[in-house]
Image 1 (spheres, rainbow, N blue to C red):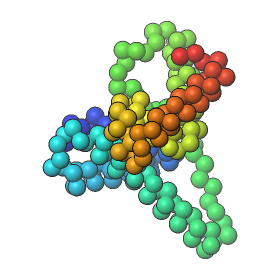
Image 2 (cartoon, one colour):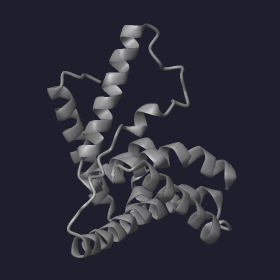
Image 3 (tube, rainbow, N blue to C red):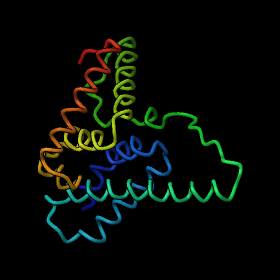
Image 4 (cartoon, rainbow, N blue to C red):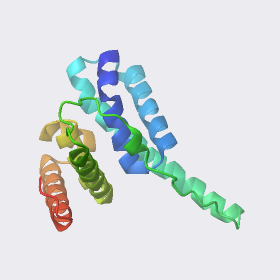
Length: 181
């Protein structure tokens, strides 16, 4: 269980960041998801952990939005002043990569690679929620269609549709920026 949680921690954080765009909330979501997996599913076989964890993570993200909506409603009702919570920076830019073997060797290549990764992350953020979820589970988490469908609570056909639309949208957006992958 510990090895699995350690292996998915960074990717789960990025998924949560893409979804909620708040570092503290993303950390809380990942921590809560890990605790739920350990408490409720610790006795399940290890090969079920990826699907279970993704389902728990996505449900925890949805719960975060539900709580935020309720809090926002009460804040609006009870206060004429609404705080302006602008993000000061992108915490994703400060994360180190786990595997540095693919990093560019010259400063120019490093800058180009950093700009490309930033553009990709920006475009992933812009995807509709279900497309982003399907794309990240299939291509970042390397889950198959059936596992992704189970984690998302939809049909395998829906997963394929979401992934196809996400891939086409990303390719078009990146192509428009002059990025060829």
